[in-house]
Length: 404
Image 1: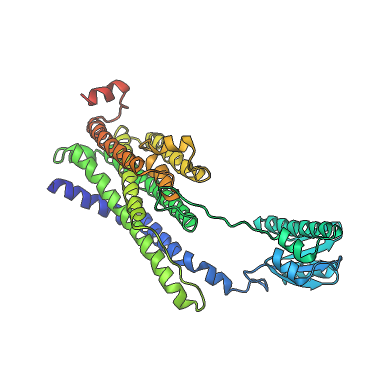
Image 2: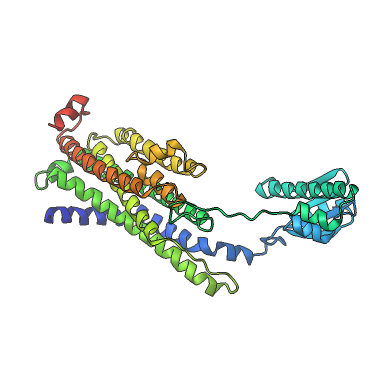
């Protein structure tokens, strides 16, 4: 136990004192601190006369669109012009974002660049024209203006009910989806950073014959576990600093920028517990894979090719969780969430979106724990064999012999 603790402390210090790690940690913490305050900062900056809120220069050649209709369909602030050339000049001069010309048979939208805002605005103006056409058609049949409004603005009473789930509701769905994305993204980065460090450390120790000296005083199994836990502790410290910076910014933003609404995170306690559990399971599982693969080579060039397998698996799990948000109840998502190597990403996504039954969650956790035990046992055998092989690549026969 004393040897294990010594290895953990050494690996933690070696990783945490690395300049690249320190710079990245400070950069991530800075981004996490600034991000919640970004909307308030942007809202107070004058970008050449254009504020953070879109504005439109409108020319109505029909005389049929009053201010009330425009405000109902086009949320941005509208300024009326009498000539389209003047309106376009105002956009080019930076006074407005868009220029819109309304004609009897359609409209023309003048923009300086394409973007999602342009597509949304085009859809809004299209809906406004459709509303006008339907109103005129109904009016031609003698329908009163009051009745026309009732027909066109009818909205059903909607109530979406989740069955057997305590986390996903209509009100919390988008928040939970953000939690899933953030957890998947942070785990993805942690695995790439931590796994890359394990690879380079083990290969460097082998190439410099340092490992040959270490195994004389410490068992390979203890060395491998110490490296995984030491690097994991450093990564968790980085994640903890990110969380502290984010919450500190959420607290301070309303104080620094008066009038800004406070950010709140209403995450269910059990959902937070699952987030920590699946993050740790995923990190430990892949860390053992990285350590085992790194011990089979003594050259940095070979280590890069060795890292492709875990990287591809990590990317597969990450993108499954991203694409699965569109259809979290799909059969392939259910299957992927029970595959241990993909479970940390996909099962947590299913939990946040309310498609995972309680028994499925425990089955996934159990499968990942069993997988970690198996992988750690196999990794210890491979690591022990790898520490004794220099200059030659282990064959499949060597790997089988290592498990005897």
